[in-house]
Amino acid sequence: MSTPDPTTPAQTEPDAAVPELETATGESTADVVPELETGTGATTADPTAVFAWSGPPDADAAIPVVVEREGYPLLTRIAAEAFGSFALVLVAVGALLYTQLSGAGTLGVALATGLVLAGLTIAFGHVSGAHMTPAVSVGAAIAGRIGAVDAVLYVVAQVLGGVVAVAALLVTVPADLPAGLGSESATAMLAAAANGWGDSSPLFVVSGGAVTFGLAAALVVELLATAVVVAVVLSNRARRSGAVAVGLTFSALLLIAAPVTNGALNPARATAVALVALGSSTTPLTQLWLFWLTGLLGGAIAGLGALAFGRHTTLDEAPDLTSPEWTEDEQTIVLD
Image (cartoon, rainbow, N blue to C red; front, side, top):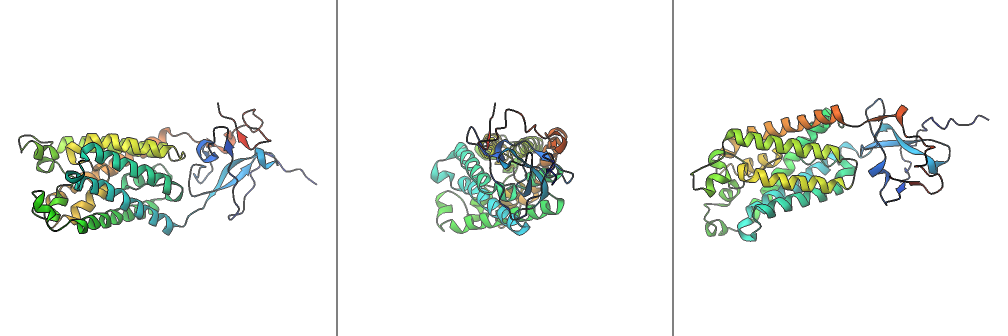
């Protein structure tokens, strides 16, 4: 009888449960196992990957390597993106729409948006990657983490989810509230939460038309903020704790972008408000191109950065299983 080669990965059955190793700090392998890459480009950080085990016959000392992509069906992932976008836009726009009543202000809106994004990332990160915005989907596609067709379907789902969220907010506005807040109608209230520059910039309203942010300022702020957000998302996709980093980053950048453009950082959010508020103002729709340009370009920049500088460990460079950092008796990975 031949002895199994301990360095040869063994394919697991598609339905087989993959044991989760626990680290000395209580983290799981999803947080600490290096990205191991195969010829298909799948990695251990991919939430839709199927794992095999490589190492000595003793399963306690084996480590997961990716042999093929498999996981949640496409329809499930699309649904997760649609719902995630719905929730994100609902909070981002809703908090701004009712800020005069809640007294939340720009800081409150930014924190609320960041908190819901962090929660959604934790809830759906293992399902679809928790992109929630077209910018992240574009970045992930360019970085080779999802296919182009999947990315397009994600974007469509995100836009639809955002539109439903804004439409739901419009329905909640009491009939007499707009007049009480000095607005002509519910759609006019919503239009005030739209993204834009020039006469549509919050600075124009606050200053009584004396000063405003122009096209150049809006383009630079939205582009840089979006690129940073997508870079943080792509850098933290394999860590549960990364949800906090993503949420805080989004909140901080929203504080910068809010006075300039009402803070989009998300083409789906800008599109949803522009479409639903169309009956009151066409300006958000005519300025929508900028938020798609900055969203797609910002996502592409971050995706190219991840593709060029991201860390990838090939199977030939897998960790040495005989190293003291790997204990064979307690299914524990000892971290430095």
